[in-house]
Amino acid sequence: MIVDYIDQFRDRFGVESICTVLTEHDLPIGSSTYRAVKATPVTDAQWDEAQLVNALISIFRANRRVFGIRKLWRMMHRAGHHLGRDQVARLMRIAGIHGVVRGRHTTRTTERDAKAPRHPDLVKRRWNDPTGPD
Image (cartoon, rainbow, N blue to C red; front, side):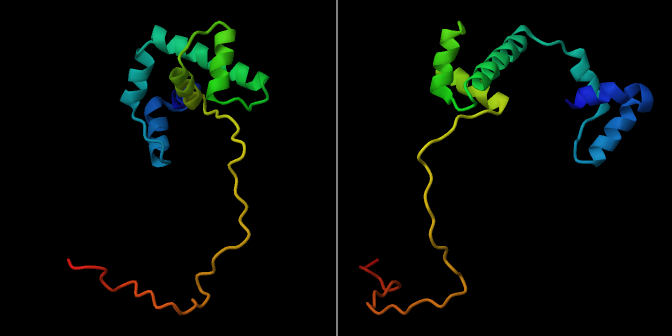
């Protein structure tokens, strides 16, 4: 993404000046890093992974963006992409998607006030006394 940005404006400002400004704004990239990325071709594995992520996102969107790992794994199998469940989970992390979680919410009715006075220990539990010999 940063490399695409530099490509867009390099004719106008130059690679070194763009990299300097990006580094000043907490996006550290050197001109040598930019040139190394441009010189490195996309491998077949990266290309295949990008295609699988696109297929995964398409299936995720077609199913109302609610499917989790297991259901997307099954849907990928039905679509002809025979992947492992862990690989589907990794591709979901790459794509930044996750399924909807049902039933894991709790109702919070009260919140503790740290400034409120604490009630005295009427039972005399003696929390700080030793319970046995050391």
